[in-house]
Image (cartoon, rainbow, N blue to C red; front, top):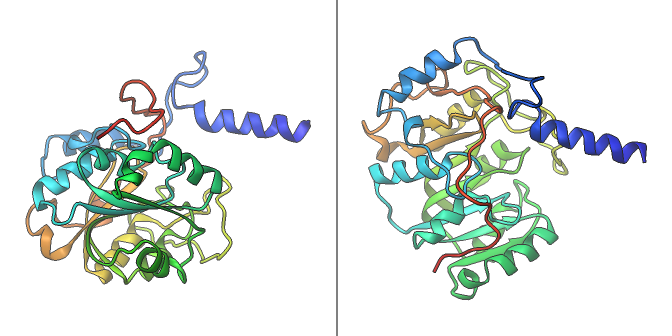
Length: 282
């Protein structure tokens, strides 16, 4: 009973404490003293993407940033691959399905996969969405996407959110060539600091800081793979990369973590109408 109460309290703390004022106890949380000065200057500069963010079905403002990136570089296949989607309702691919995209979701939890099959029955039946139940590693990711998901070559979007080995899995992907990559970064570390979680085959996130990689490390990996860092979202969760040969002068330069980093702003909460309970698109 004691362990259960501790787990409930921890969950309550993580979900609500500091996100909104709670009975007056918490007013403000911050990581950097220059947060708002820097953000205000970016919102006035259209080469930065923060001003374009909005939420439809994404966790934060990713829907808007993804839309603006493709407004600039255009789409080719309208195909996405996304993994770490839980039941899919809050994901980067959900709104894209509404806009006529097709894609592949990979999720490790069998219960979540069963929910997706029920909640997204229409796009699955229409062959616009494929769902695969699999725990992702750097060694199996290409087989999952290409052999099981039947996707290879150029795609428009790759979205990575597995709360752990994200860096290593992105580095390992060879079967698809995404034009845009969205990947979580560990905003605990400042923008000039390199840090990557040591690869752990069986890693499951424990809601601690052992997850992912710093933005600087992802910037350097992206550059090695042929990508330019173009943005991070205001809440300090996701980084956005575009193929270098597509980015041209469409985004802010220099494309380095020191200029594009956002700290954690977990007091922010994005709301887009009533909660989603099923896919309601065509």
